[in-house]
Amino acid sequence: MRLLRTPDERFTGLDGFGHPPRYVEVADPDGSTPVRVATYAVGPQDAGPTVLLLHGEPTWSYLYRHVLDALAGAGVSAVAVDLVGFGRSDKPEEVGDHTYARHVAWVQEAVGALGLDDLVLLGQDWGGLIGLRLVAAAPERFRAVVAANTGLPTGDVDMPEPWWQFRRAVERAETLDVGRLVASGCARGLAPSARAAYDAPFPDESYKAGPRAMPLLVPTRPDDPETEANRAAWASLADYGRPFVTAFSDSDPITGPMGPVLRDHVRGAGAGGGADPGHAVLGGAGHFLQEDAGAELASIVVGVVRSLTH
Image (cartoon, rainbow, N blue to C red):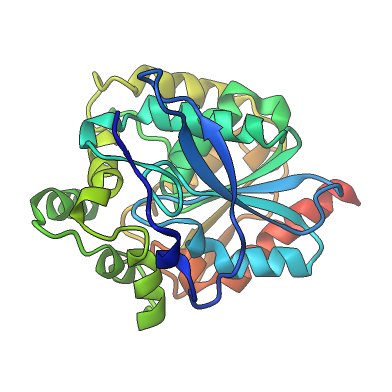
């Protein structure tokens, strides 16, 4: 597996994001060069649970800049992780180097390398597809979950047409305009400086195997290679009795239907007549609710953390 590494100067002077990266290494499935993963820590690192922030397609931890700042201001420990192929993390050059299982393993190994085992998951988009698998595999490590515009598809139910349109656009694009893709998922607009920050990890098309691969990895049929693993994760999550909060936007046609499904299935979300842990619908926000409603999302996460520590 050949890896590319975005030059550091691409990340200088980013608007609103000055967090220095801490790098950890995870295994190259070919057994050769380790893969470097970028992480960003804020807040006190020895007080209470740590919020694990996982982004999705085609963004990176810059997406969480407003949330990270709010968590730090509230005295909450948090760590954001750039998925392999995104942000400052190493970028496998071939689309075929990316698999769902590998991304789960890479994040799992990165979290282990950071020594984190008292966690609150905040996962959006692929951050939930990956993060919920981690919760299902080791529920004792997660004190709570905030699922934001995400799900855990098995291919048993077809993806909505807007998602298929997105997938086709990514597949057919000769030049993949990452900044434009992110802007199209924001209901309140996206500043040119932010668009530039989303383009920063990708100096040219050779760096974009990750963004091109991820839509192809979503299970869309019952015989997908990851369908059984996701079905097993659903079974595990049904018994997850710790706080499980859904924070979905009101203007995301892709993930919107998943909010009620999660709330009806996960015991900690109030399924089966349990207490409602405080689910939220964020108004006037699109798929990237961190951009449209970052302060509101952060407030929800702070409330969850404080409920665990008071």
